[in-house]
Each structure stands twice: as structure tokens, then as C-alpha cells.
Image (cartoon, rainbow, N blue to C red; front, side, top):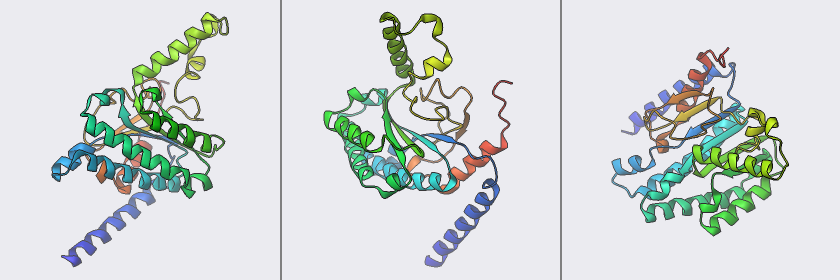
Length: 260
């Protein structure tokens, strides 16, 4: 059995190296966004509590960050909890928020974050989150707000429609207060009021969804107009570097015309 495992690991490393050889000299996405789907089903298949799937998924995020840093991807945006997810069982929601707290605490002392000057930001209707989690989010954002080399953005209590509504309300308030003339409102102005306005490349070049589902579920509705989409039949906790490399290879093989 051990011999078989070592053989499988060897084959994996060879395949990973082959994929990296294929993509390393191609155009790399500046911004990759991922819908982290399949945590609960991963746990269910193993007869585990759902929170264990979320925990394993959170650990995978740490590895993903390393992979993206190695590949030179500047912006990474993760869809981890939607406004609709509040309707899940209270215990599961509580566990998800507890895991989020743990990971945010780790970010504060994570040398990768500070040495790579990664700005961390949480987007969504943060006011819906528990007060303790809100305070921790503010602390992490304050600790990294001056960084501008890399950007890690986490969508919590997020909804694409909610984002557009919130942006519209902010613009309406500016117009009401005579701070913004209606005739000055265009796409560029509108984008400045979206949750992603802090990023140099707010529109993802590549959006990946795990678990086999083939829809965006409201993720970055405005920003995804010209994003390349890649749907992978793997649960998020099982996501590997080869899955990321395969998605990037798919991205590189597509011809992006942006409507031209």
C-alpha cells in the first residue's frame, strides 16, 4: 500500500510539473476569483459534521494563497458566505463565523501577509455579521490597508444584487446632497461605489467555481461581465494546485475579445 501511495504521489508531482511548464510562460490572470463550493457535501460523503467541511475548506484557502503568490496573481477574491447563507441552520452559521474569526486572527500575525504586502479586505454587508467578527475585520483591514502589492478579498454576507443596490444608494445620496451631478454618472463612476473599488483590477480575469455547479450564484455580477468562467467537478476541500493550474491553462487557451 505504501509503495502504491508513493507511486501516486510521484505521478501527481510529474503531472503538476507538466502543467506548470505549460502555463508559466503564458499570460497569467491578474485577478482570480473563486466560489468556494462543496464544503458540506465533502463532509457528508465522509459522514462528518458540516462544520468540518468548512474547516477543511478554510485550510485549503491558506494553500491557495501560496499557490497564487508563486504564480504572480495579484488579486484573489473568495466567495465564502452569501446573504442567502444566513438561512442555514444557526449552528452551522455560527461555526462558519467561528472559523472566520480563527483565520482572521491568523492573518494578523501571518508573515506572508506582511512580507508580501497583501491588503486584506472583507466585502459584503458586514453589518449583518456578529459584532465580534465585525471588530476583527476592522482590525485586519486597518493592519493591511497601506499594503498595495497583492490583494486578498473575502466576500462575507455578500450578494451581487445587494452590492449593486448598495452602490446605487450611495450614488443617490451624493446626488441628493448635490455632491454628484446626475449627468456625471457613468460606468466608471458607478464602479467607484462598488465593494471592489479598492482593487487595481476589480474585474476578475478568471472565475472558478468548485463542486460541479455551473452558475455564479450572484457572485460579482457587475465585475464578471467579461470574466472567463471555469467550473470544476471537485469539492473545495479537495482543491489542489493542479486544479488551479488546469483552470489557468483553460484561461490561457481562450481568446478574450471583450466584445470587440
